[in-house]
Length: 274
Image (cartoon, rainbow, N blue to C red; front, side, top):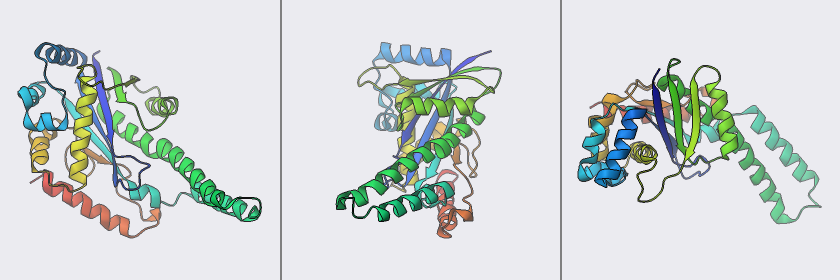
């Protein structure tokens, strides 16, 4: 039985409608390899593995990471699919709220008429994203990264939900299938503690730039040369990347989502597989 650390971080906010994607990176490493790297960072005073320092290979840090037997995975959600998806429960609750607001027309102040539905919708979306989409991010990663015969410690930077709610979802996904626990880590400026969380954060940021179609030749080359060869097979046709709820279902309510998804996936494949 071996012990592994799995580090994960997010890029993009599920609740910010100006963000097009919500991404999670997953970085798997054997415990003794991680302890070696933390000791090396403390001894050599290497810079933290941020996006710029990795792309520039500052002090040779990308070379050091390449020597270690990392395994990588990314999961991502296209956020307009979540918001436009036809959820019966969400639709019925919001219909009921609208009805109640109309019945209380005379008792409510004008500013409350818009704020109450907006706050209720925000709360519903938070519950549904955490318990459906984020749960599926975790399920995808756990099924790919974990084996029943080994032990796993997951380290996440503070998630976009309460820690207790998040821990409950995580434990539900783990169930009795794996020996795994979740620890909420904190990135601290200038310290090598939680080196893996810094690394996961940088990789999530890089992949988000790919999805946002930013000018990212350096990032594409970095992923192809350092990450994809050590990544697990994904569900869109290239190593390392799982799109959540792929392919998009026509029942989501928008016929455009399917063609948008096809264009997105083709763009990713053309850049990473060329």
